[in-house]
Every structure is written in C-alpha cells, then in structure tokens.
Image (cartoon, rainbow, N blue to C red):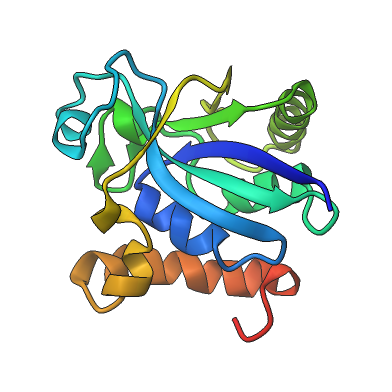
Length: 180
C-alpha cells in the first residue's frame, strides 16, 4: 500500500468531494482551503474572495489501487478547466481550477495530462488550470465535510452535484467502489 496525498480545486469543494469519495483507492477526502494569504481562513472569508484561497479537496489515496493520472483524468472530467475563476454559476478566484501537487511526480503527471489534453483539443478553449506546489491546507468547517452525503436532496446538490455523479458513473464506472 502506497498512500499519497493530492489536493485539487475545481469549483465548489462539495462537488469534488462527492465525486472522489466514490472512487476505489481513495481513502479520505477532506474539503478545505489552500493557496491564499490568510492563516486559518473561514468560509465567510473565502466567499468574500479576499483571502486568495481556493476551495479544494485533499485526497489521501492508495497509489497501488488508483494512480495520480487516473485521479487527474476524473478531475478533468467533472469540471471545466478552461474557465478562469469560474465553475458554472460559482464565480471568483476561490473557484479556480488548480492542482496543488505534493510530489514532483504529481507535478509531472499534471503537466503531462494538461499538455496531452491541449494537444488533443479536448476543449475549444485553452486549459487555465494552475499547477502549483502545495501551500498550507486548512480543513473547512465540519458542516462542509460529507456535504452531499448529508444534504443530497438540497437544491444545489440535486441541480449541480447529482449530474456530476451521473457523469462519473457514465464515464468512469470501472473506477467506482462496489455498490456505487
């Protein structure tokens, strides 16, 4: 077993958390904040856009079960990496597309997949995803953890997260935990 950590931002952390916790080999998913200039920020500060943080998820995963490359493929499937500081109706730098790598190998994987997708012209616009070394990570407040699981009937969850989960099941079924 080779446990690694990877931190990703691609819009609302509730969306990312709901997707990545369904994957085989992902041991934990923690919603939080990274990439800003305020120590121990809270959600209200993040929402103001004044701290510079992105909403992110920090994954702990078994690299013998699921690779960084596979996690990044899923990441690029479930958000639009071509919109600067925006995902759908969520706008602001806190919703930017960012890969915070923890190892040089993760950096190389991220750069390779971005280069590959740009060459293949997967999207009509250029990828704006940042690839940066991991800065301090701050877990979000407890009510943000397991948000979809605890609030799946809430309007945002049904309108935004459920379609992402459907897309995950459609495009990456073989990666899902049994019963998902």
